[in-house]
Image 1 (cartoon, rainbow, N blue to C red):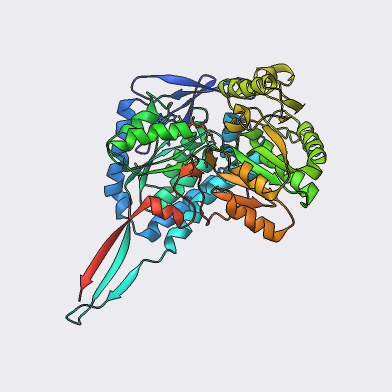
Image 2: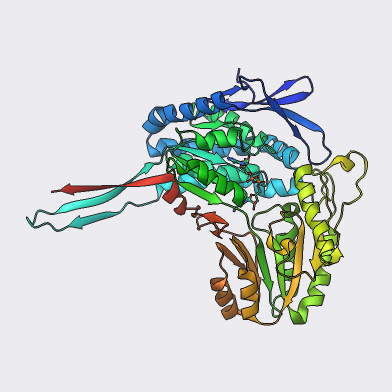
Length: 497
Ligand code: NAD
C-alpha cells in the first residue's frame, strides 16, 4: 500500500519529507509545528530535514537524472507531466483543503487560482518544450564543402527549488513544471509555513509513475536548516528561488563559491498609477484587488497608490469603501473576502508598520489595527485592511515591502511626476496603470522600471510571456520559452561536411 505523506498519529498529522519516492521522517526525529493562521489550531507536525536527508534528496535527484529520467524521450517525459496535471485535478479537493488549511486564504480564491494554476504549470511547460525550435546554420568553408553548426539544449541538472508561502503550490510548480519538462530533476524546499501541498504532490508523482528521485521534498527553515543546507550542497547545479530580496542575497552568497546560476523572483513595493481620465469604477475595483487580494500577500500587489489630483479625494473614498466591504472570516465561508496573514510573526511585522505610520503622522483613512474576531478566530493572525495618506515618500512605510493588506495613497499633478514617483524605489517588480488615453498608457508603461506593467488590469498574464523583476526584485525571466534559458544549457555543435 502506498505510504501517505500526511500520516496520522493520534489527532495530529505528520508531514514527512519525500525522498527518492518514499515519505520519510528525519533521522534526527526533529519536527516543527504547523499551525493554522485562522485560529492557531495545530495542523500537523512537520519532519525537519537535516544534513542526511538533504544529502539523500540531492543524491536521489542525481541518480534519477543520469538514470531513468534522463533515459526518457521528450515525448515520454511530457506525457508523464500531463498525467501529473490530470492527477492534481483528480485530487483537486485534497489539494484545496491542504492549501487552505496552511494559508487560511478564502476557498473561493484558492479554488480559482492556486490549485488550477498549480496543475496547469505542468501542462503548459510540457507544451512549451515540445514546440521550441533549435538554432541551425549552414556555413561556408574555404574548401567549399561547408559545415553545419547547431545548438542543442540539455538539462541543467539537479535544481534546488526554494518556495515561499503566499501561493505555495502555484509558485512551486511554476518552477518544478519547467524544470522537469526540460529534463532536470528537483529538490524542493517549501516554506516552513506551508508544507502540505508540496508533500501531497509526492503522492501524485508516485501515482502516475514519475521515476523515483525526479521530484524530492525536504522540509525545514532557511538559515541553518534545510534551505541553507540545500543551497550549500555541492550536488546542486542551479537554484531557483521565490521570496524576499534579502533571502535572495543570502542564497547568492551560498552558491557563489561554486559559481552556480540562480533565478530569483524577489520582493516588491509596487506602484499603482491612476489618471483622472480612467474608467473610475474599473480602477477602484482593480486597485482594490491589487492592494487587498490574498490579504495583501501577493508579490505583485500594490502598496503605493498615486492618483491624479482632480479625482484624488473621490478615489480615496471609494477605495476606503472597498476596504471596509471585505468580510474577514473562515476560509470556507462563501461570504469571506479576506483571510488572515500567514503567521503571528508576519502579523507582528505588518502591525509594526501600522504603528510606524501612525507615529510618522499618517492620516489613517481606514483600518490601522486588529479587528475583533469571535471565538477561536481571536487566536488567528488577523489585521484590518488599511489605507493611509499624508506620509512623505521617504517614510519606511512607503519605501519598504510590508506584505499586508495596506497601501499609502498620494496625489500627483503631471504624468512625469507620476513616473518619477513610481520609479523612486529599489524594487522593480510590477505596476498597474489606469487610464483611457491609449498613447499615455503605452508611454507610461514603457517608462516604469518593472518586469511587468499592467494597463487597466492587474494579475492578468499569458503564461507564455516573460515574468520577473527589475532592480532588486529579481534576476532572470521565467515563463514560456524564457524558462528554458534557465532550465537548460545550450551546447554548440559544429560539423564539417
Ligand atoms: P522568505 O524569503 O522568507 O522565504 C522563502 C523561502 O526561502 C522559504 O522556503 C524559506 O524557508 C527559505 N529561506 C529563508 N532563508 C533562507 C536561506 N538563508 N537559505 C535558503 N533558503 C532560505 O520569503 P517568504 O516570506 O516565504 O515570502 C514572501 C516574500 O516573497 C515577499 O518578499 C514577496 O514579495 C516575495 N515573493 C516574490 C514573488 C515574485 O514572483 N517576485 C512571488 C511571491 C513572493
